[in-house]
Structures are given as C-alpha cells and as structure tokens.
Image (cartoon, rainbow, N blue to C red):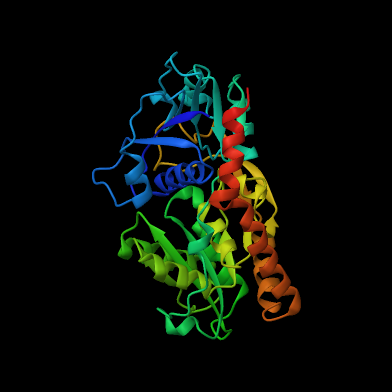
Length: 362
C-alpha cells in the first residue's frame, strides 16, 4: 500500500486550507498512510484538526507518492516518488497567462476538484493526465442545530450566501436579484456570511447597489456577518435556511454549497461552473464573458484573456421567487431530502476510497 506525503496549507484557516484539510482526512479515513507537511500563505496560522496533528508525527520515510496542494509555480518534481501529483483549483476557462502549465507538465499527474477545472487545465496546455478528485466533508458533524442566533429568521424563508467578498463571487447579482424580486413586506430574508471585508465598506457597497436599482425609497435590510463563526453557530445558521445561493462567475467546487446540502439545503448556482458536478437544486443559465475585476488574486490569473460565467439575472430572480413559493410544499421536502442524500457521496469515507483508487491508477 502506498504511503503519501501530502504538502499543503492546511494550517491557514482559509477556504483553500479547508479543502486541503478535508483531502487529508478523506485519505486517512480510507486507510491510506498519509503524512501531512505544512506550508503557509498567511501571516498567522489557525487551528486545525487533532487528527492531522497526530498524523504530522509520522515520518516521511517510505513515502512513495507526493501530493503538492499548492500553487503550480511551487511544484517540485522528485524522482524518488513513483508519483508526483499536483493538486490545483482554478475558477476560469484557462490560466495560460500564468505560465502554470509548464509546472503542471513537470508532474506525473494533476488532480482537480471538478470537471470544469479539468477542462481549464486542458485549455491551458496541460498535457499530463488530469484527474477529478472532488472535495469532501465529515458528514457526521453536519446535523440540524436548533439554536437560534438570529431570532428574526425563525419564521421566514431564508436565502443564504457564504463566500468571500471578491468580484468573482458576484455578490452584486445576488443583492440585485433579491431586491428586484422581493418587497420589504414579504417574509423572506437574505443572509450573507462573508470575509475579507470591512463592515462599513461592505454596508456602503450594498446600499450603493440598492440605490442604483431605483425601485423604492426603502429596501429590506439584509442580514450579514463578516469573519469567522463558531462551528456550531455556523451549522445552526445554515440549518435555518431554505436555499443556498451562489451566483459566482467561477467555482472549482464550492465547499459551503456542499455543507448546505449536508444540512438538507438545496443550492441555486451558476451553470457551467464546477458546482454543476454535485449541486442539487437549480442551475441558473449563464453566458461566457471575459474575466474582469479579479484584482484580489495574483496578477496573471483570471485576466481578460480568460473567461468566466455571468449569471442570468432575470432567471436568478424568477428561480428565487419559485423557491419561495414552494416553501413547506411536498415538492420542497423532497428536494431537501435529495440534496441531503446526494451529499453523502462526498463524505470523507466515500470520497476517501475514490481518492485511494486514483492513487493506485497507473
């Protein structure tokens, strides 16, 4: 059986780090002898699972596969391993401008979390095998929580968005759709859990969008939270919601969408992104458009020489309305159950065996 050296930024406390954490735990759950070693892209490290801390005590002696879950320009090939694997997540149609393809082509194979990311690698000139290795979660921790941290969402239909405050996530489309479609008098809320934002700047950003809509003098207030949350409160918040909405212009996967599904919350998402692979709910039509405004990422990534998807705003509006109208219907209950059932395929134990199989592929 192979022994795997897994190099990644699992101590960073970011979404990227979370993906790394769950890959390690999935491999471990399948009985793979995995040895984690950290790198970092943050100034401060965050806490990470006790099990990974235990695995860090293992020695690297005897490792015959090396997985490097990092940016491609940091990949390093070592001939002592029978496999050198680069793990890559990419959110636009190609990364030709970065030059990453030459680093990918040094490796024996590349792993990506979705078919969309695989296509991006191939569009970029990656000629080594590209294999889809989806993300996973520990399903046992995602159970309904009754605690209410926001009383006003107890008797309303609740849409929730969880993601960074960056151009790619397209929060603007979500704000527009919600306020175009719903009046302040309707029992419906929009909840936004985000990061990388100053609260005053974020409030001004939202108010500016509503002002430009020009449909009414006074709009319903959104409910938004910025920064980290206690895990139980986080799960409790999602448990109170009825739809997870991700209007992102590009996603290699979207772990918060999978978290929502594990809690029986269907997903409204942008079609033709990595979310197509696993989301149960409604896929909203999109058009291909050059990337624009991705200033929060590295200079040569997601430039206008690459494309991403622009969600159809009118379709998003009507889908949010239809979801609301199904509130408490049998059709809605069935959809919520399908979301939960489908998410089980992405539990550590199940996905770990898939990753183990990929390791053993020649």
